[in-house]
Length: 134
Length: 134
DNA sequence: GGCACAGCTGGCAATGGTTGTCATCTTCGA
DNA sequence: TCGAAGATGACAACCATTGCCAGCTGTGCC
Image 1 (spheres, helix red, strand yellow):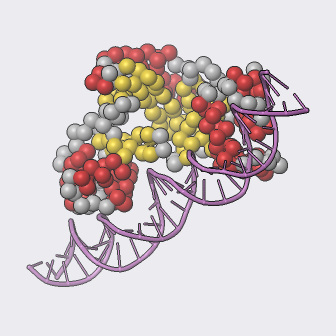
Image 2: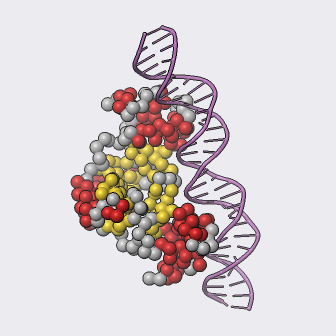
Image 3: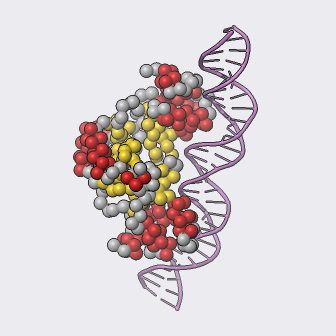
């Protein structure tokens, strides 16, 4: 799906800035913060405001187009697949691999049932050092 | 183990303030933020500075005595058991149940191996609404 | 194409959780 | 009991993030 269409579907106007953010996120393996992305875009000659980067990332995350990661005090974002998945995160380069795991899903529902909880969500992330960072 | 001894083992002096923080965290089912805890302690007549609450919680977490939870922009803490576990968190009252899950541990190592990652840690939390909040 | 308007942008100010500073006070081993 | 070393707390500083608002732009409609 084109970035243009993705924005449309999310009820967001496909502006130059948003397309720019989505383009720089496309196929990027790592998660980035608003500040980092803003600096990179500026460095590459793209005129975009920091506030806009923040709002765009938040809007895209709200629309489910981006996954969020908290990195000691700040929030990082990454373009991830639509289907539910978990993450394998490199603590050195912030690369993220998407994982699917039926056993985790099963565990989630079993545990919640046993404790009388109504599940609203869950998150299972693995942290480590990737092959190329070792 | 006494709170006094726990602090000792963590290389921290058992001061009135630290004992006070540990005491109010004892057997508490929910996770609290520094601001919340500070307000509660003050309300109950305990003279303690906000800075001290922040530093104490951080120190206790660093020492492995507390687990941390990020709650939209702020950090919450909870006294948890020493053995490795996961969490079932009520989004309404912040109650936390500790879970152990061999299937999750197995998944962590399998997935990391498959992707060539060296595991440094992992986290698997379930969010929901507890029985009494429903 | 031209219009009008709802949505978007971006510089700047404000917010708010958290941390740095430092003078003062405690704890604890000698 | 004494003197470090460690801890406290009021206050200022930080800094990621958000609010504000005047101007800009995409979009549907004529």
